[in-house]
Image (tube, rainbow, N blue to C red):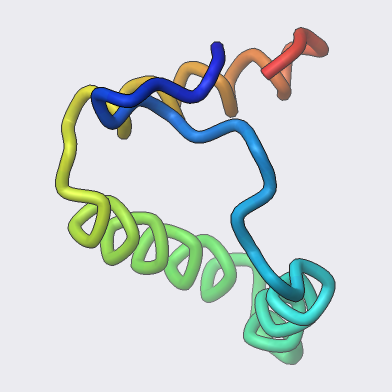
Length: 74
């Protein structure tokens, strides 16, 4: 899926410091139980989905994440 002008899923890097963001996500999970990690992930997903605010893009993200889990390209 290529980035589209109509607000589709952005596939190009859009973070100035992606390693810092990854570290922040890992740090947020540190010391949590598996159940707490799943709850944190769910809350993060819902907050980010609300921020995105575009149901079509959110569906594209879900499909891309699922494909990645199944070994396919995003």
